[in-house]
Image (cartoon, rainbow, N blue to C red; front, side):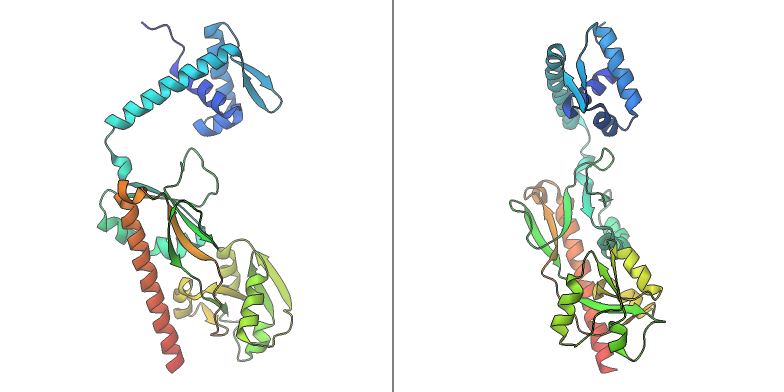
Length: 303
């Protein structure tokens, strides 16, 4: 029988040593900080010595703790390598995607079942979180809204927005000048409305009220409820326009310089085929939405 501390206490110790914090280790292992402290105490009792010195903002390894940490790292790395080698390669069919919630709701969610049906066994994990957690893990793919995509990665432009002003059906009226000069709803700042007005050639006065939001879902809900006029990409709200939930306040559109980009490591397209399949599906999905939106514009222009 091997004379070793428990695996639980060694896992807790390795995570705390790597993060330099009991709190961070608890978050990583999805257990309470008290449980981490308990496992560290058990380890120190088993060894008969201290492995950490508690500091104000974390923990610091003792010399003996440093030796144990180096050994744990080697052992866990070796164990992880063997496990990955012998485990059935289901991970090849899991794609973790970090994406904004509005893009996820309007582009991915409505017909993602069609992609899954065409790719049996695939799992798509969508995360709207900016930070990596134990539950989400690192993203394979990021749908980034940016001016310049990050260097050293594979990038593919998915969508350039065409922002149009929309309002609730009860707010819409024939006097568009008054409507566009009423309450303006903004996403994160005033720049997009300023650019839309400048490119439209309209001589609009200052708005009656400016409301700034950091969530496009809330903006769309505020529009439905008649709280003002907002700029939203037409392809994202074609369903709401067709169903009459919202109305087009003006047909002029503004294209921001930022675009939605598909971003991943270059070799992922080769080593994980689901990545390329998901990219191709997204491209086709967005092209179909843009086609439907263009047809709607043409129909409204001839009616």
